[in-house]
Image (tube, rainbow, N blue to C red; front, side, top):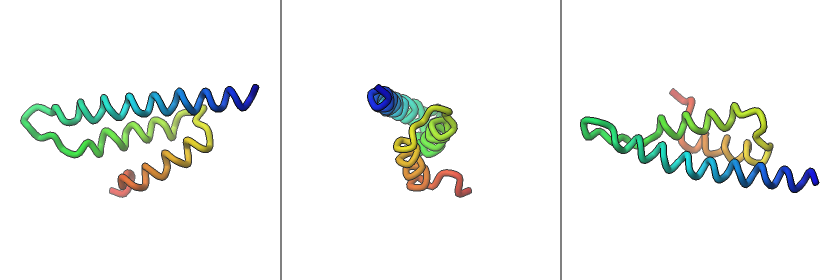
Length: 76
């Protein structure tokens, strides 16, 4: 039963991530003034929210931390 719960949480979180990436990147590309940017701030913000989420599974956390490093977040 515990495995099913973990898999369910991972699936729901991956769905939320997919929808979130789509909406944040879409919103970032529609900035006023024509400056679309690359959406890096939106991606980093969303990844930070997932990292800080209390119930993120270790597998999802490892994947998100890899994406966090890949996008150069926090390296200002």
